[in-house]
Length: 381
Image: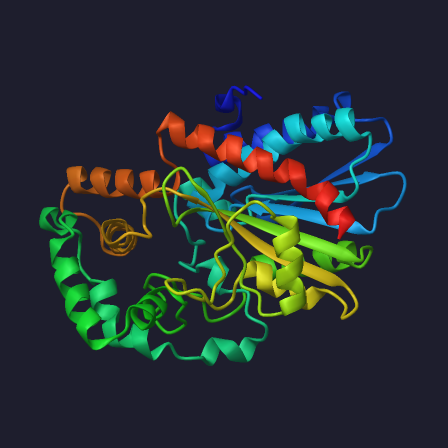
């Protein structure tokens, strides 16, 4: 299928949100008359007009299956999630109905889970909280210590303005090489990215209390989830992995759920969290949603990750951490010059929302192909 992928990508949060709202308002022109579309909004910040926009698409005949597609949890990564949601409603759903005359499942869309970060091109919320480290199972977990992070936090969070020489990652590379002689690679990676709750101005800060999103989403999702026997939850991210490639990252221990994932994503490579070279994080949104389900419900989590910097390779991995450090450092302590600020923010944006048309085309083509397969496969489990 040939698609003008450009119709799905927009330059900022508000234009993405408006496109989502407009698409849902006009979707019934392309969908069967027995399809019910229920749009909604959850207000994260009334003063700044920041919302999580939602849409529940149901048939008049109740379904036992729900497919949830969310994006923008890491605000700066929200553009790909928004684009795929638009593509799903405008292209994938009409094609499914033309070919199969039935959707096989209901659809829940969550647009812009972190609207502040989306609007300001940051991964975090207004309080520097990485929301994908904030959805802990209970408040006591905020007391957990990431001792590895604490040992290197001064390297990760320089408390001074970004200088021109900081743009060269060689210094960081030397420090990480030294740390690599003291720690195994997985230990070092998890120390950095797993999540930390002690340094509010640091990268990967998971907060010290639950973010507003939890109190907004929990009753909303609990009410919807209770209607279904099977729930497939897809959270869309960008940044990690091979450039122009869609990776599948489920953090699942249950052998039964792993088998369901293999069947749902047959024909695609799955990167399990316990595979060599990968890592686990705490407070992930897709894992938290499992706690909203009853024991008898089948819950299947999946992260879609569109690679941008070949961060699975040493050079790309270094660039990713470097970009994270510089953007966070500049946000808190400023920049020595305007040129340093522009270059830092350019790199950061390219890491999560590349300007390359080929990357955007890959997001749509690969994402559309997978999403088109899932409703029928979910019903067949």
